[in-house]
Structure formats: C-alpha cells, structure tokens
Image (cartoon, rainbow, N blue to C red):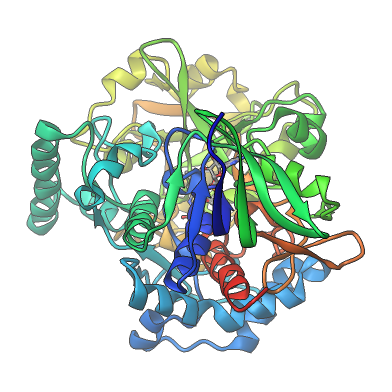
Length: 564
Ligand SMILES: Cc1cc2nc3c(=O)[nH]c(=O)nc-3n(C[C@H](O)[C@H](O)[C@H](O)COP(=O)(O)OP(=O)(O)OC[C@H]3O[C@@H](n4cnc5c(N)ncnc54)[C@H](O)[C@@H]3O)c2cc1C
C-alpha cells in the first residue's frame, strides 16, 4: 500500500491546462500535487505546435495591432452562433491578455507574435487578419535537469532525423535554405546544435512548439515546489460533506488517497483515444468509417468519467465533437505507422486534394478543421474516408509532401516505403492510387487553366489572408495556386484524424464544474479539453484550445486560492 498524501490543490493531468492551474496555485502559495497517468508528462500539448490564441496581447499591442473586446466577441459569436457559451467567452476575452502577461512576468513562459497569422475565417465579422495567434519561443530542455527525460517527445514524424524539433518560426528558413545565405546559416546552426546534443541526449534539447510550452511551465512549476507523480492515474474522486475533498489514485506502489484541502482540478485532456466514445459521438465513426487520433493513448476520457460520477453535466451538442485534421500514415521499419498532421502543405501552390472520383471537394487552403468534414462528405457513399493530396515535381522539391521533406531532403525512402506514390504521368498516378483517371485529368486541366492568372475557378484557393498565410513564399500572383504540370507527379493518402475533443464537461467562467441543474460542484474544477469547448465545437483560429487551456487553468487556480 502507498502512503496517503495531502495538499491544497490536486491536479489530474500534466498538459498545458493542468500545468497552468498547478503553477498558478503554487505561485499563490498553495501546496500542489499533480498526478499524471502516463510515464511521461505533457500530454497532447507536447505533440502540439504550442500556439495560443490570445487577443489583444502585449505583443500585439507593441506591434501596433489594435483589437477590442467587441470584435473578439463578435467573431466568436459569428463562428459559434447559438452554441457559444457567452459567459465563458466573455471571461476568456476579458482575461486572456492579462493572464499571458501574468505568466510571462511570473514564470519562464515566453511567447512571440506571428503578426500575419490571420484568424481562420477572416471574412466573418470581428475576425482579425493577424495578431491573435502567438507561438512559444524556443526553450532549452537542458534546464529541466533530470525531468528532461520525462518530457513527452513530439510526434516522431514532425521531427527531423528522429529527434530534432523545428518550430513554425524556423519553417521559412528551411523552405529557403537553398536560396538565401541567412536561411542556410540558421538551418546549419540548428543541425550543429542537434549534432552536439546527440552526444549526450537521446534527442535534441532545443525545444520548440508544444514541447517548449510544457518545458517552460514545468520548469517554473518545479521551481515553485509543485510535486508531479507520474504513472499515477486518478481513479476516483472523494467527497466530504458534499464537497470534493480529494481523490483515490493508482500509484506504482499501490492505491492511495490524496486529500486536497482546497480543490481538485480535472485536466485529463478529453477522450480522443476512447474508441467507444468516438464510435458514439463521431458521425463518420458511428457509420463504421475509419478515424485516427493524434492524441496520446492515455487520453481516454477519464476526467469526464470522474466528473460524471458526481453528476457533472456534459455538453454534447457541439458543431463538431472534436478538432479535426487530415493525416497521412507514415510506414515505419517495424511495420507500424505513425500519423503525420497536414496543417500546412495543402495550402501551398500546386497542391490539390481529390477523392477517388478525381474530384476536388474543398478549397485545400481552408483550415484543417474545415477540411475533414468536407472529405467525410465527399466519401459519404464510400466504405472508407480517404482522399489524395497531389502535386508535381516543382512543388514537392520546394515544399515536400506530408512527412517527406523538400530539397535537399530525400524522397527515395518515402517512395520505397509506399508512403508517397510517384508516376511519370497523371494517368499512371491515378491508376496507382485507384483514382478515376478521367476525373483527375479534368480536375487538373481546370486548375492548370486558371493557374497562370493565379485563379482557382473551382474553389477560389488563396482568396483570403489565412489561406495566403500558408501559401508558397514569394509565389505570385496567388501564393496558393500553381499548375500541376511537371513530371514526375506525386500523391499521398489522407485520412480523417483529430487533435483533441470538443465535447466535454460544462463549466462556468471560473472553470468550476457545473451539474445538470447548472450548479457548481463544490471543490471541483475542469480545464483544457475535459471542459466543453466554449466556442461550440468550432475552430476560429490558431491556438484556440491552448489559449483557453492557459486562461481557464489560471482562473481555476485563482478561484481556489481566493477561497473557492
Ligand atoms: C499535432 C498537434 C498540434 C496541435 N497544435 C495546437 C496548437 O498549436 N494550438 C492549440 O491550441 N492546440 C493545438 N493542438 C491541440 C492541443 O494540443 C490540445 O487541445 C491540448 O494540448 C489539450 O490540453 P489539455 O491540457 O486539455 O490536455 P493534454 O495536453 O492532453 O494533457 C492531459 C494529460 O492528462 C493525462 N491523463 C489522462 N487521464 C488521466 C488520469 N486519469 N489521471 C491523471 N492524468 C490523466 C494524460 O496522460 C495527459 O498527459 C494540437 C494537437 C496536436 C495533436
């Protein structure tokens, strides 16, 4: 039997939302224990790009970008309609910038603005054409000391040489390294640092993306005395006199109770890895179709199960049950596959996605969350959901395809493994992929006709700032449109995936869990993807889960610290 423990605040889950709550509570002088089910910490957040959607940040103001409360709320309202949780939307909008400033002033958290990163639907009222999405600064993993080995590594297919991280901010240099000396120098420095790291570490220690975010929060939390217990899933909540008083956890030494004097925070990252819930709540899975999550296997909806036992309400009627992304499956030498998320390549010039009839079904530069439902719809009468992303030699050399890198990277291993199909003619490519030859030929002919003028008569690719943000650098007249004409031609198979769930528990503006009658469950808080998306299952812009994860993690801890 393990010895029982006691603390002020008990947090289940070590993703961004859990760490935001734990760190805030610790800075406020509370004694904090975090329990984590996995043998590593950081959850889905460690797989993520670490981008946060924080309107009116200090960084945006300093860059001269003006934004205001009404525009933010108008945009959220336009996106989510009557599914918007207005109380939470207002709480988020009013607190987001100051919470980020607070973290930056009190911890190692450090973010930079990506000024051109437009909201995903810039035509909507209140949308921003750039200034609400911020990315983490690279962080030195060596400063985590012994904890570095326990930080969940990024998804392997998103690294170079199996362990070198590349941040969104590094991508332009990678894409232009054969053309610009400054880019070549930047990239060479990254490779040199990585080579040096590998003499002493199992992977690169220059962390970017979600790994940087978690490392910054974790280092700060450890410095403030937060105790993290790995391989210790929360199994049951305990109550005393009608108030949540702690939990029973399964530690490696055995079952034990952790008493929480002031509050318990559920931050278990939703249910993306729960087969049963996916089969019930994802329409295409309910119809027997294929789906694969990018989230870790441990995110099986434990938080929701724990909350349900205490009658916490679950909001099921979201516009979409999860945050979608098209993925491709990269074959590994041991016969397994690892998913690769297609966030960016679809938007570039000279890439189109077609179904097996050879028809395009969406403007490929639209967001990943919009792309998947269109692909599901295109395959409504088929046994499975898939499409092919297609490009020619000019495009693949400049930007790669999925996990296959641009020049001077090697395509050969990806062709040999069957990940990428290659053919000298479009007809041969269609035959290899099982695509209707005539259909593909018609689609490409239409694209090639408009391409010299930068026009996409079928879907209007490249017609707004978000689409152009992901386009090909310096490619005119439209950075998202180019002809597919130079052999050989290439294709990669896309299937539906997700990066986390939107259905979750009902919470209020302080992140308190609410029961079916709308009353707070005393002593219990829910943050991150365990909480229902207050944006109603829509995806307004880059960072719309991690921004709220930080903000409501912080607000939960503040409410606990102020006496609950
Ligand atoms: C490739 C990719 C890129 C992404 N990029 C972005 C981005 O740039 N911006 C953005 O906003 N979103 C992004 N996302 C989505 C984002 O990562 C998630 O929405 C977010 O990380 C969820 O945070 P969380 O704290 O709720 O959960 P997580 O980070 O998943 O953490 C939950 C933790 O709880 C643990 N846990 C589960 N059950 C228990 C239990 N019973 N007891 C204790 N612990 C438990 C899990 O093991 C896990 O470590 C991306 C996702 C992916 C996969």
